[in-house]
Length: 319
Image (cartoon, rainbow, N blue to C red):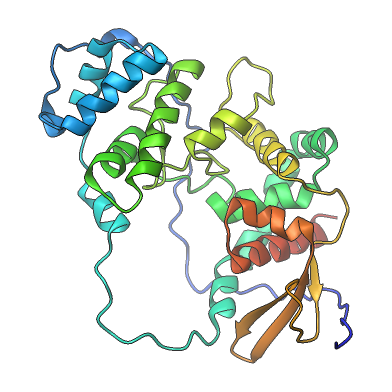
């Protein structure tokens, strides 16, 4: 078997080709709930007559003690989002698939940019106390906490604008491929809103229901989000709670502090060596358990490698 070749990572940032249109949501706060705003005897609106919605309401009443009139009123204000349906059920491609030469190069170029690195350094400096405390409390290397937030939401500048309640309702009751998963996430979202006092129509995020600077799904929020600023509320739309929550997520997934993530290798049939396609040829990387922890966030080798390389680039420039 060929011997592994350890190399230091050489990060070559990608110059910006054009200005990125970025929405800044750092000032966003999910309003507290006023449960009197939702009360109805029947469901009206987009989801009137949906037996699946009525069955879900009965489940939430029986299992979790929600008020039936409250849920009737809430679902009467739900909007079916056609854009979400299209994204969940894209039209099948009619063109034959082509070899994915350079797929890692294209993916890497989205995140290893001067803008990402510089914004990562600025984010770390602006929230150094929280990053350092999260690293110490949870045993997670600080640069990876920062890099996850960079890859997910460009350091909180692009958290998404879709109403989470509308998105999850649409995905649960108007799509089929993952409807069971999204119904469970909708259940967790309503429990999250009640537990944290969120006004359920206000939280915004991705079209698939991911929320905050770290893009947690509601089930992950309920298990892993933390009140890191100790103000009595878990609010992952704000940096301090998001930083602590990402670190907690990594810790609970088995992160090992100051241990290897991956290093470049020779080609090998060993299952710990992955292959990534560049325009100059394939790269081979031997991955360790921390690399697999990153993949718990998103089960993609390219994603985990982008987080890893962005983390190193930010750290090199930060110190």
